[in-house]
Amino acid sequence: MAILDIFNDSTIIIPVLRTIFVVITLMIVSGLVIKTVKRKLLNRAKTKKQVSNIGIFSDILTYFIWVLLVIFALFTYSGSWTGLGLVVGLLSAALGWALQKPITGVAAWIMVVIRRPFQIGDRIIIGSVKGDVKDITLTHVYIEEVGGIVEGEENSRRIIMVPNSNLFEHNIINYTLQDEYILDQVSFIVTHQSNVDKAVEIALNAAKKHMKEYSHLIKQEPYARTFFKDSGISIHVRYLSPAQRIQEFSSNVTKEVWNMVMRSKNVEFAYPHHAVVFRNKIKKGQGFQTT
Image (cartoon, rainbow, N blue to C red; front, side):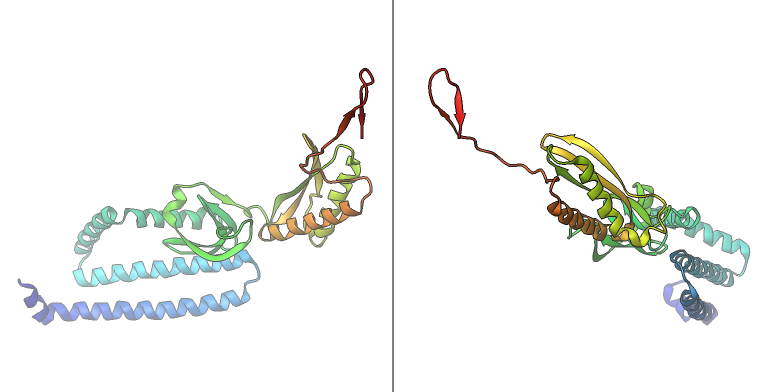
């Protein structure tokens, strides 16, 4: 039968059009219902985890309804489960060959939903991409970039779309899987003649001052480590900082350390420099005199 004959045959084209119309109508209606319910739930959500769960499960429900509608359309058109099985088998074979990456992406999305290696709002690193998770869809993870065109741990406001298939190919680093805080440090070098104990005290006081607002949430107090360097003693003050404000706090602690060292009488920063010493030879056998 020619293609034109198929389109002219009302016994074929009318059921097809009717099925397509019903499926599209049900998709639109279900989409509006899910979107309305999602919006109301988001208005009541109080935590990042609740927002993430609402987004993920609304996506699951949407995809599930779409699959049911496709099965309904195929069954309606074929008229029997045998015909449906044949159609589904052929489609599966064709899609499996042509859509390997998207299928891998769907498998990765299922892994994210079940295993929860990260959720919306987490700061993560996938391969060379670092940023905050903004959305998780069936095919991509949307990440608000950190760094990139700027140095450090601040948002560049660029959105990077990472294919879900990449989740099986790269390590995933999650800053906030355990809680909202990660270990950060500010380091500086003081001269060998400085009072090291005083330098450590300055470093600890600076960290405690700027982490005061989180002291009731963080169990671990700031601590210091000291190391020998060629030019002096290296002081490292380490503290738990909010992952998404790490740059802000390290900057504040650095400035506080600087101010306190400048006011101190027995602590000095060490820095690379050259000293020139002039010596005059006075008489043979009497050594050198420094001037």
